[in-house]
Amino acid sequence: MRRTLQTDGLTQSVLEAGEGPLVLLIHGFPELAISWTAQIEALAAAGFRVVAPDMRGYGQTLGPERTEDFSILHLVGDMVDLVRALGEDACVVVGHDWGSAVAWSCALMRPDVFRAVVGMSVPFQPRAPGGPPIKAMKALTARAGLGDLYIVAFQSIVAHTDLDLDPTVALRKCFWAYDGATAAADRHTGFLPPGVPLLATISDQATLPPWMSADHFAQYVAAFTDGGFKRPFDWYRNLDRNWELTAFLQGKTINQPSLFIVGADDPVRHYAGRHEKTQGDWLTDLRGQVELDGAGHWIQQERPDEVNAALIGFLRGLEP
Image (cartoon, rainbow, N blue to C red; front, side, top):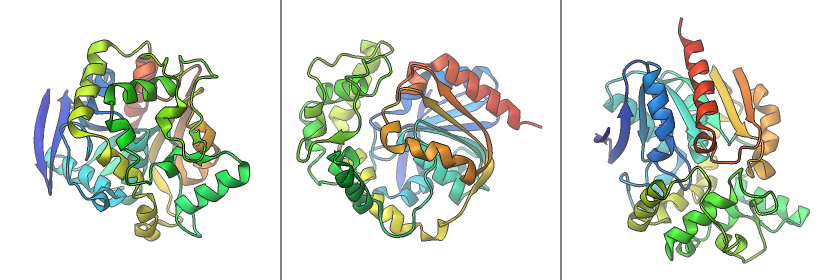
């Protein structure tokens, strides 16, 4: 069931099903609440109340226009407000991609509200001392001769316009380039030649992944045609601001039960995979790191049965 909830300063559109302990599912880029369709059904059947919002700037939860209103404090605040609006005091939070970063931050900032956490595809990355991340990313890729990480390219105030020109092509290319079923030579590394936009580095022969039906894809296209890519890009444009706002979290660990799920062939591992090796230093109750062979980045949609089994096992393990 889809319904709308009013939280502090934001009207949130959510998909909801089931009864029992609350599980919050947070999507990433460029996704929507519908990316969790298989998980909503399975977790509800397993005895949980499941809620998946269209996040701030996405789908039917468009939100504000100002770039600075998409900081990590806003995104975590939205989830705290959503739990309260649902009439609950606490929940388990699950995130994928950017949603994973938000889920880790929820657990880090409000352990009283988020009693356990699952991250998918993007591992926990502690705040690094010494300066904001974009400058560090530029220096690292320059030394390695890798060009620009797309995250750096997304900082441009006009970077999103390339995707706005044709959302159908943009979404098809993005899903294809990061999918496990795409040939390894065609999967994206995340790095761009200087001055070359993301879509120009992905083949025009891109097709829909095997798990993506035409009807499902049409929902993505309609949402991004209506809402555009500017607000989703604003999440990236706040990375340096997020670093400045979170000095109070320096050195803080996540002590709630946690789980990490990743595809063995996820291209994000080219630039974030190193953090998988150190997660145990920061997640003090890490109960597993699940790697799905042959899976790419869109793991909950590529491998719904295996992801559902891992989630249900983790959630049941939390109960007395």
